[in-house]
Length: 168
Image (cartoon, rainbow, N blue to C red; front, top):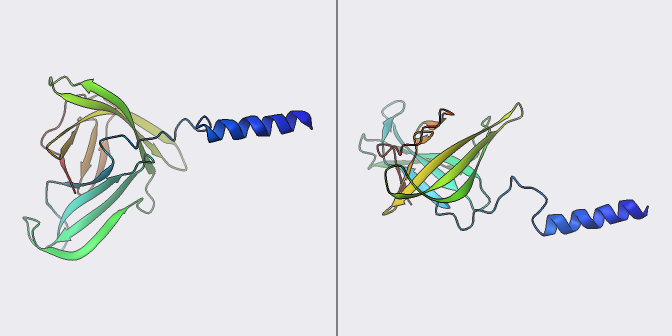
């Protein structure tokens, strides 16, 4: 009985000090925290156009949504917005900001670990990002687009400046 009581106390101390779950990192200081929107406007269905929205939470979750427009320039919002959420039947997507680095392009950036968790399996990929004047660009290993998210485990480190997000 004494051993069980001791284990409960130790477990409580570890959990209250943050030592319980190493995958649930604190991202409150990450520059990614907030809501971002794709710059690109893409055709969807029936003369509808989309911009993707992505929310990076301080708890380390990535939530996915979109805004619908009636024009190819994504100016006339038709009021059908899907707020950032975990989409039905999608894996849970989390991120861990791994800290500042000098990117291969010679600019300041940061490292990132993205994890996709589903009932079947868990997969992670390392990526990089940079933010300049409210514009967020990721390395080619991780893409956020109006119609979805893409990852590659090929170790692509170069920043893709053609597919960036704007801070909302």
